[in-house]
Length: 274
Ligand SMILES: NC(=O)c1ccc[n+]([C@@H]2O[C@H](COP(=O)([O-])OP(=O)(O)OC[C@H]3O[C@@H](n4cnc5c(N)ncnc54)[C@H](OP(=O)(O)O)[C@@H]3O)[C@@H](O)[C@H]2O)c1
Image 1: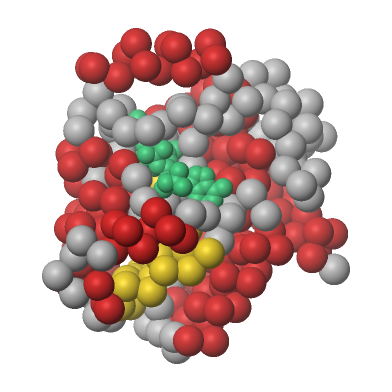
Image 2 (image 1 turned 45 degrees about the vertical axis):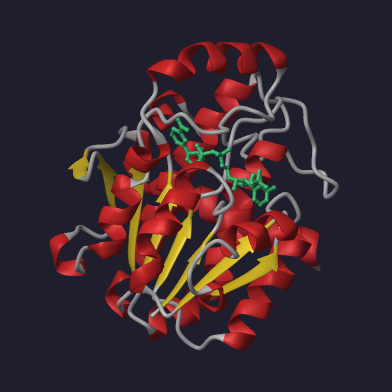
């Protein structure tokens, strides 16, 4: 069995990897910092079980290259966990001209999931998006889905975490009958490096509240639960919190928004990659 997980070099992702390591034949880690990943992997008993490759989610070209590398090397992907992410300053733009938060939290994972789709379907696998309860404060601005006119880092973060659930549900609609199951989840308020790349005010606020947060080990529990559970014990298209199904916001279940975001995302990728 093969696992692909993003954001494996820190926090919730690293704890998820530690727990899933015995269960998978190959753990494929697309990371932005290859040296950091190689150092972490060298601490495991069996480092050859890992395949670390460079992928910067802020660059769709980098995601494209990494996705192709994965599909060239592996026929089947049993589980894709789209875990990487964070809160970034409102006006920060990627080299490709995208809003940073939109790129890293949404479009990069959207693209990776598209690239691995056939391999996931072949394995009758699962795709998981690590979202957040912040999605409840999010919205989809139909005239600015790329968040070029965002109002704050918090609002952008809430919007993209809503996008994660909308994408999960769209993948469920499109591919559940072909055997691919899709899930989204909230990990809890977790004491990780989350927020370390945000604006100064947000960093101060997050650091003040962190002592009240749960540990990364506890924060990884819902991801691990979904990874380990049989598909017939789970609900594809479901949003999970504390290892239980939870109703997301009504916007997250809005089929029109799912379709509009999906079409917009495909169009954005075409513009950047053509
Ligand atoms: N912590 C919370 O309270 C909380 C609550 C709700 C949801 N979440 C979600 O949980 C997920 C994991 O976050 P965390 O709390 O574990 O935070 P974290 O400790 O900051 O980990 C974030 C991971 O994402 C990677 N990453 C960031 N930007 C990237 C990029 N451009 N390309 C590739 N990888 C990138 C980081 O890589 P480096 O190691 O190179 O920095 C790191 O591995 C995120 O999606 C976050 O939104 C967290």
